[in-house]
Image (tube, rainbow, N blue to C red; front, side, top):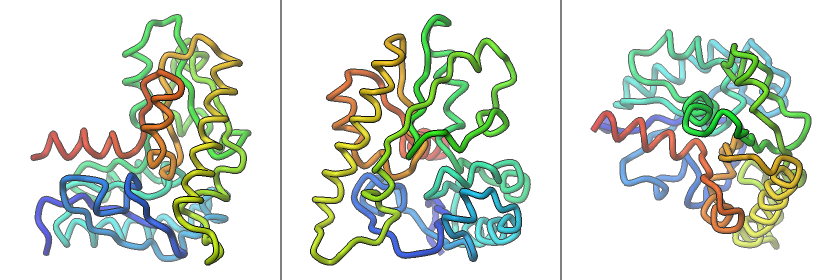
Amino acid sequence: MIGRALGVLTTEGDSVLPRGYVANPETFDFPIIAEKVEGAYMDRLWARDSSIEPALIVAAERLVKRGAVAVASDCGLFSWHQPAVAAAVGVPVILSSLLLLPLLLRQASRAAKIGLLSVSLPSPYDDAALGIENSADRSRVVFGGCEGAYEQSVKTRYPAEVTISEKMAGLEADVIAGATRLRASHPDIANILLTCTAFPCVAPALRKKIGLPVYGITDLCRLTMGALH
């Protein structure tokens, strides 16, 4: 058993795990342990297939038994199952960066907007996933897509002749382009929230390029684990 570790629920399939990715042990200064969720393929997550929820809970419970003091995930689309997993385990559950959204709304002026960057548009997240009931707050949330980012991301198997550094360069270009388009459409954006768990890999470059605070799942993980240590 590994003590004081962050548990990470992972999707099915092979993933490349560069530094900065939530499931890479080199990303954090605390240990992580991972459990693959049986049947959690990307097409089922995009379809909001509720039948994967029992397997998700089982995997989360295994993480806790192995010593996880908090449970995160390697895909923001697990957010649909946040309430069920949180109810099933006795540790903090942080399946998606969307949990930061209420904080970011309060952090900024009421006249400012919060930009949510997803893999593509339309955004897969509805009002229930956002967790915002106030219509004034909801009007401040705007969506941007990083078309092309999924193909470049750590979720996708890549040809042997393409290096991980080339993949990450492509991901960086796509995410910066998506953020630039979003800011051009909404110049009153105060913060950027990355909904895809691959995007934090290129967050430092994005912050430098656009000059705005950028948040993602890895920031939420550090906040949660810091509160527990």
